[in-house]
Length: 77
Image 1 (cartoon, rainbow, N blue to C red):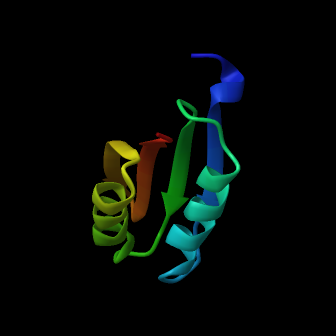
Image 2 (image 1 turned 60 degrees about the horizontal axis):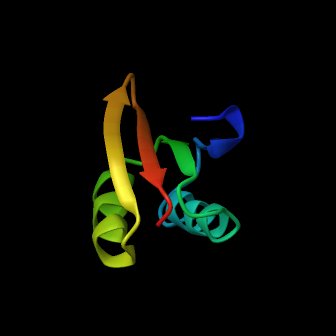
C-alpha cells in the first residue's frame, strides 16, 4: 500500500457524533481502496463505527483501544 493510500484522521477529544461525521466527510473525498485510520476518545464511537461500516458498505478492517484512544481502520468501497 502506498503512503498516499492511508489517511489519518485525529478525532480525539470530540464527542459523538463528530468522530463519525468527520470520518464520513473524509471517506467522501477518498478513492475506492484508500484506507482511513481514525483516532477517537469517545466510547460511543465503537458502536457508531461498527454500525456505520455495516450500513455504508465500507470495510472496518480493524478496531482497537489503548489507553482510552480508540483506533479504527476503514477501507473505502
